[in-house]
Length: 196
Ligand SMILES: [Zn+2]
Image 1 (cartoon, rainbow, N blue to C red):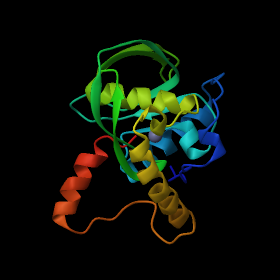
Image 2: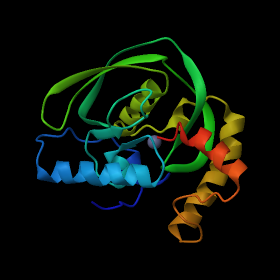
Image 3: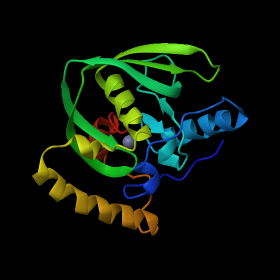
């Protein structure tokens, strides 16, 4: 397995629709393994293939024991239905350290193939629904910033984000944040809970 480099805000692969997966082959299995290792490495709860530069409709999600017994590997995922509303902080590994409240449906039914080719249906709510919808957005070239109506927040956050991305890409700061203060760590864990 390997840690993959992330694509960040501004990368064209994050702005275009990804192509359907035609077959589940060794290449996809390898991508899945590498994406899983990378997602844990960067402390995310979800990752979409375009975030590692692969424009394919494939996502992984692991929101932990409260939501799922093992990671989801979802090939060509589709939103079957959504309902309700939830409001909460959301982050994205491609938009490092930016956490903003985003409105999402409270529940979602998602259908996809797993890596064995079996069709599975997920009835998700809370963080899991948020993570799945966020990842499927990535497959359509949509970032969570597009769900934020508050122009003032965007005007404040986007320049900070762009500067951070520039520093990561130039090697000035690490791609994985390091927190040394215990207080910061706790705060970070709360935030990381919704970094997809
Ligand atoms: Zn994301």
